[in-house]
Image (cartoon, rainbow, N blue to C red):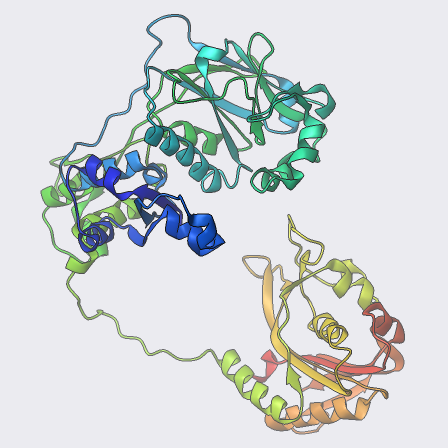
Length: 577
């Protein structure tokens, strides 16, 4: 949930009245926000860096307000004030419209085919005749950063660039070049750098280093030029210093580059701006921003039923209008027509509209009622069995471990002497690290890694885990299923197979399964590359295989960086339900 910091006095001035802290907290709650903290710049610096660093900092009271992640229109002082004023019926929801330039031609952004390899989408727009004060300028920059951190997913999906239009000239070209071919003076620097040099320079920058990974491995980097060859920006890293905006800026050129066209359209729709033309590599042209309104229809009965209230159609329409969703009854029964503005891309379904009606009505105003259906909570049988086994296995002298459900391909295949194709593993499509490539198909690697991390502990090490593994299963609608497994290992100077065998017997005793070939359980010799030849047995219950136990193969032990012999047991406990 994003947090917006606003100066209290400026906020109250914009709202047209003052509030006590308690009153404003209540107003935020009514609107679906939360007043998270009341502080000051001096207090923040003092808390984070010490009193000595805070001397000279401002004592102006700041409100830190938590805003829902879906409400991009509330991420700045101006948007917040507008939303609250409409909510309090002191202001009508604004109408957004795209305007043509009054003088001169439409600004044009030309996209070349080279961008397809790195960041293929872009849109543009122009803000005309604006007046920046220090507070407005700070709010403008902060809004841009809030959007970057939230809907833009830390610039990985979208990067927004703002430029002083009076310092550059169109048409503008969005292209991609090798890093060594891009050279310009970046924002707040005093000399030119190539793109390669910039990537090295910003590796130590506390702010920009977090974005370098987005393009640093690409063969070409995106860059935007004006008609004179001046570099506007190298998205998503840094703007050029030549076109930076300031308090004297009157006209702003906005460009957004993206990997996702839907997201970049959302960014442009957050402003009321002059149109700009975007020319695509295939010659197709589009005018942005779209600022498209759309209409949805739903019934007051639907909203009343879902929220748990009983309000007339006209009242429901008024509630929605207070949330910047202009609504009116259609006259066809209890049907309501709702107009979704371009600033509300979060409204996708009738349930989103219903949620706004509930907020405007006030959650505290909804009458408490007894649910019409009665249910009795009960523990899942598999979880109940798991809890019972955990207690008795611990009583048997084994220590419980809890490992990650994701692991590397090597852990469940190569290290256990198996092929990855034979494991039925579910693969992660875009793993962030080599340690989390697949969902585990066995609990054994996790326990062996736990032993490896605790080799300095006194011997013997006796560990167990009861958790889920994930296996491919074409009969399931998602193509995979969870399976609850029990695994235990004994690590000592001698293999201790008799200890693991004894634990199996104790477990079967707890599960009330007798030692019998047909009507109980038994073990028989088996071959498994994970275990030492001739020292592996398969566990059968009522004639069906449920797991294996034995002495681990020396190669398996060494691959997990262990040096002592080890016995292990792993079996499925779901057949015992």
